[in-house]
Length: 323
Length: 268
Image 1 (tube, rainbow over the protein chains, first blue to last red):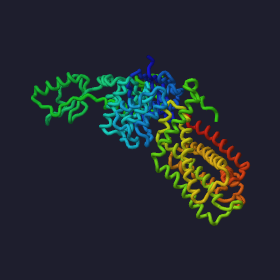
Image 2: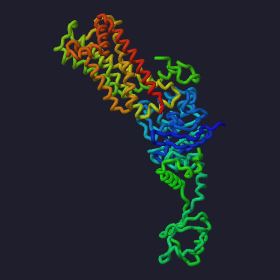
Image 3: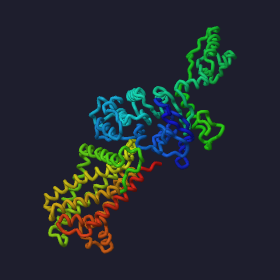
Image 4: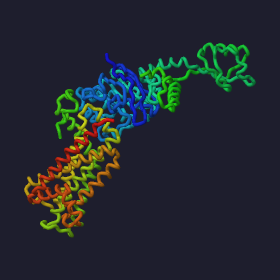
């Protein structure tokens, strides 16, 4: 089946500002795809191009096989859009709002079904203006869902939510997946992307700096060193450690911090050495960088590249491929 | 206006039919919200009622206009005209709000004929203006205003008023979507509507104005609309004012609807 979304070499400039600087990606049918990045990374610009709200400066884009710039009524009836910021008709009730939007679609879902899918069954007769922030957002999703679209765009569906509302929103996305919808969501929370998405693209400074299943992104990190941290008893310095700790490198002295790509071997050697001398290594711990760390590292690195301005040829990362 | 069915080629389920249906759905969206925002309706009626009473009693005794035994018969059609024109500025505020709060963008994501957002809004505004008008009319009757002509003439006068106000709704729609800020849209509308309605025949005969102002007032399209409705309500022949007023209404509607729709549907 043709992919839900294909993007190749997408660029968008606003005057002198390059918001998107060459994005390639593909989203399959039925996939939940997350676009993660800090504010100003180009997430919303990209989504708005995919939704047909913005023109692009360069590149090829197909959403459900159609160029969003030429999306007609039939195309639009197959996508659902939840914008980052949009208010609802405050004086209409949940049911009325959903029924109103259903009126624009050729084959809408039953109103009650769309409301149930977002978990607003208990609020059907409440006016939109009286809903909580999380409920409003869910109503917004119900409005996008009622046309029974194949593809849903959710732009930062949980920004500003308290933890409970966020959990609720996560369940809702799980529901959308169960309904077989393709979901393209943006977020600046890495844990959210990890929890919800089949695949994650990390975007920074208008480029994709990493792309893959949350698990694969994790294994890309295997390369990155595990950090082993502990304190030596008074009087001992890192100089006393055995010279061969499976290739570990000392990166800090108090507490001692080692970086190793072979944590098991390093720990075995370290613990053997300490046990032999009857030493207790206080606060011993080994940590792998979390996805969050990778995300911060990658986005910080991209931000650091920025002053070079011109797209430095050799500096390109694999994910952003040459175009 | 040209037929709207061109926007998305052969995909439209029923061409003009769905455009009309979308416009109607959008209109009902506003109409349904109307009774639930009583404060909006209150503002839309209290102010006109106040104007009728203030002008009739404050100026009523001191102003006399040749050809009219009672100043009220002269004044009240002018207030009607001014009020419905003020009412047209709701479009500027409402659309500026829709634009700034992302409602317009949200609606654009729907498989609808895009201009329906604008057409629905302006049509709903006509209805709200009609409600305002009816309230004003009742107050006017209570203080002694009468239709001196036939009921057909009175209906025609009302039609001219609403058609003229409708054309200004489109000007205000363009202001609203261009400005995008509710407060700015509000004052932007009033800075030109206010002088437009006062430098006219609405309250006094332009011949009493300074010589440099008189031709401005006399050729003001609002004067034409006021004169035509005043004549019809008083059972007098409206003469060419009627056709000129309708021509202005039609022309302004055509021009500003096209400009507004074009601006609204252009993406960046």
